[in-house]
Length: 81
Picture 1: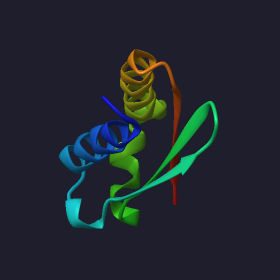
Picture 2: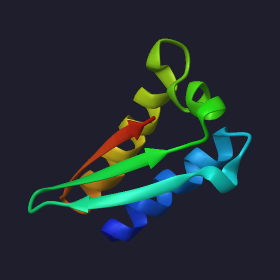
Picture 3: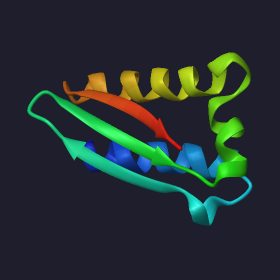
Picture 4: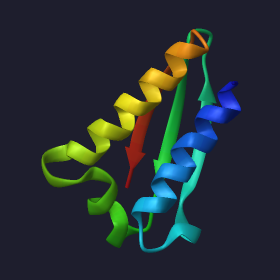
């Protein structure tokens, strides 16, 4: 499992949640210890990836965190407007 797998994981989860999967954009920003994964979705899908009170976003981050701990590297999910 690699950093690319983390990007693919977030992309797969995001595309499953939104109405416009073709608008999902994932950018990886590599750091020495931490990888920031930036997620962009269509404006009307923003609420779907954030969820009520941020629950969906928190769940996405929890899954990403669990998967990235397996490769001993920290990954952070940023949801951009």
